Image (cartoon, one colour):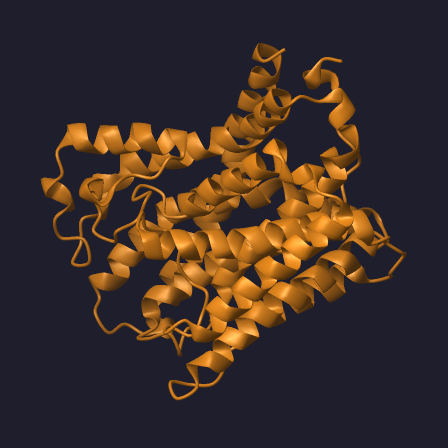
Length: 370
């Protein structure tokens, strides 16, 4: 059977909506982050855990969409479908980051104007592949593997999880997968509790430390989501979208726990969120009933815009961070108008990216890959 004629299964509408809720909170986290003087006073303190939630959602949807169809699908066909879904916005995000790069020269990035054009173009071209750049090619100064679009690191690890799934881990029995997930969960718990930072942040630099963090943050949630899709039988839960949205917000807005004296307590909180809370939220969301057309439209809109929002918002956040750095000591009240403008711009940019670029390009790719 032609892999491009495999078709798609019906979406879990509420899970689509929750992905959008989490993406919006990521934007809020990135807007609040420059105003925080340390890890303890960010008003969206655990917003970065949305990435771990995305990984778990991805594993769950992957299992639902593909687990029972490998008799009609090749590894190459699967990877082409993932490329078609993920790569257009990777390219757009990196391109927009390159176009706007020199305009973010500021006190926090004072040497941007010294970066030669050839180096910027090389970094952009590497970014199009989602492969990480070496530290010697860092052109912004944050030691990121994708300095033109900061969030690209999580797509790098998403691809790794997808490849591992396709090449062999999909063949694991439920029992073997359960043991694998338990082991990955133990590794995640140990890392979170013993990490000197008291959290699970990291994964965006091409060095041994961050690669360990990235793999640890990816493997458990992705394959826990896969296992959940296999063993959990959704029921019918009313008001699931509202309930799950509130739970996601509660987890991600939770203030730092334990303070500077008990950093392990915050690590424990984050591990428990990833290992227990997120699977529970996904299960409730998968079991949820969409009550009316309005809720259905909201979930669809949030689901459609979630990935474009995630992949393009940081292009505008760079300008916001530059503005905040040029206004040293500014507080939330003073930055709020600019933050709201950036947030609104990110939503508009995401929608335009979806309608004018992502959907047409994916349609073109589907025809070309037949």
